[in-house]
Image 1 (tube, helix red, strand yellow):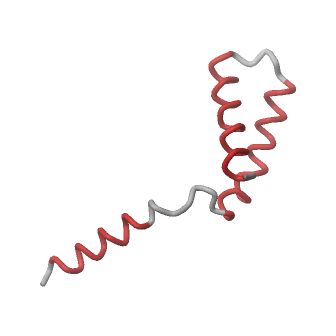
Image 2 (cartoon, rainbow, N blue to C red):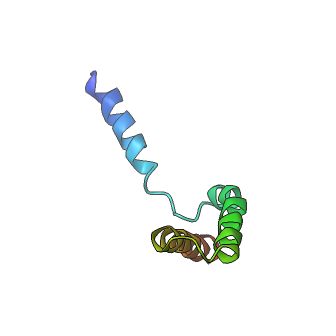
Image 3 (tube, rainbow, N blue to C red):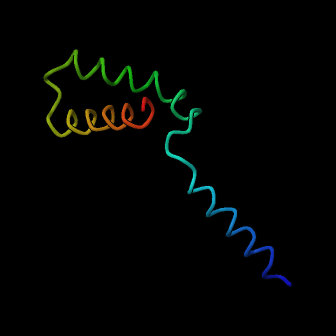
Length: 68
């Protein structure tokens, strides 16, 4: 009888990971930060390559998921 609540909790926890990646709330919340990152990368071309590439990947991924 004790296993049923544990199994139910595990099932509910796993279903939280199956949501679509383009959740509107997350996209709306992250949009200003991604826009600021885009502006910073464009305004500062002296940004070290590893940082710039990671930031560019983040901006591209965000736009692919949230603006599709």
